[in-house]
Amino acid sequence: MPRPLSATIHTAALANNLAVARKYAPKSRIWAVVKANAYGHGLARAFPGLRATDGFGLLDLEEAAKLRELGWAGPILLLEGFFRPTDIDVIDRYSLTTAVHCDEQLRMLEMARLSKPVNIQLKMNSGMNRLGYTPEKYRAAWERARAVQGVGQITLMTHFSDADGPRGIAHQLEAFERGAEGIAGARSLANSAAVLWHPDAQFDWVRPGIILYGASPSGKTADIDGIGLKPAMTLSSEIIAVQTVDAGHSIGYGSTYVADKPTKIGIVACGYADGYPRIAPEGTPVIVEGVRTQLVGRVSMDMLTVDLTPCPGAGIGSRVELWGEHLPIDDVASSCGTIGYELMCAIAQRVPVRAE
Ligand SMILES: *Cc1c(COP(=O)(O)O)cnc(C)c1O
Image (tube, rainbow, N blue to C red; front, side):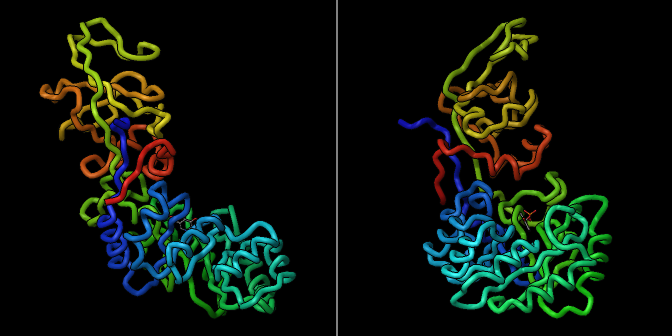
């Protein structure tokens, strides 16, 4: 028997979430963002659920090639562009669209020999201050790109830093409009948060990622209440042992948890080597036999421990949900001081994953 830990990818939930994104941005075409192995879900497993998209956005050339092997003939966008001249050969071979964010990339395109024009998304730095041309330098970059023989369509692109937060996007939209003024071409601005909360930023293409996987762009479950998103991944395991500890006895490494009364503890086959965060504190929610209980003691490499007081019928073999269908990943993430994105991307190689 394999260890009872596994992740299940819900294909119907992915399709549902893509439809939700479409409902929120009905006039835009969608780049379904599948970077980082489809946010940990597995590119090949996520593909069937997302194939109604208009295009896929990702980072790695290998992932792009894999999508072509899976039979995707539509647009694929390299969100960070390329790094070396030889990358352009791959872009050409697989007919990829690429972000272009700096003069070094433009220079490589000028030198490249392409068999057909390459479509690019010229990135503006409208305030995130990671990649792209400032609004002041944008027009010159666009003119230079347009003069490159191998460059086909040029889409105008930027990325928001605060679409999910109180600062919002007004300052970046203003910068974008200023830099893009008078330049023709499709626009590509909105991430998940902007798809949900900033319809004024949707334009021709939107680039949702996290909402396709059913989690919240802000990391707060309450922020996506009633939107109709469904969790695309359930991480589940079983109780593999039960301990009843007396008052005054501790559990696990460092004896961080000491029982204040006789307490029934369930030992769960899932630890930080599976991608469950070691930083998860006591009180982090866990579901056992459908009942919400909590983590006690430190997460170890292969196991974690939960309080079985709320679920007295639980024992060896009881089903445990770490996150997913009945426990929003953002509830676990916020208990750990992070966001659902990080947890789903961190699922370890050794966890068996299956799609349903
Ligand atoms: C990751 C990424 C996205 C998707 O972001 P979400 O918050 O997951 O929707 C969109 N655009 C770019 C450039 C990205 O890198």
